Length: 98
Image 1 (cartoon, helix red, strand yellow):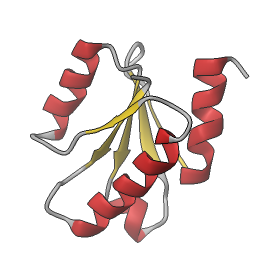
Image 2 (cartoon, helix red, strand yellow; image 1 turned 45 degrees about the vertical axis):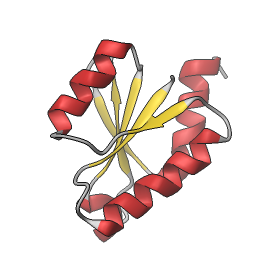
Image 3 (tube, one colour; image 1 turned 180 degrees about the vertical axis):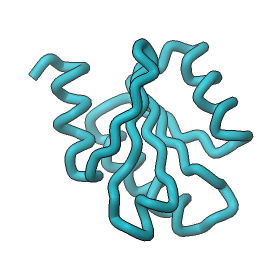
């Protein structure tokens, strides 16, 4: 599993819908998971435990301000905001090396 897609809250339909769309796009290229159960911190920790290198979080800024998503790196715990269209090139550079 190369990435997990996390809606910030599972009871907000717009967040879940956007997260599902991203999941379906990434699923065509990478082995990805979707996780909406529990608090966001627990989901990060669960992904870290099974060795998922990247967590992609869909939050309110994603849907309200079109500010993109937050991508969290497991090894550095660094979080980067990026537009949705840049997720695949970002992952491709880090996972595939190009």
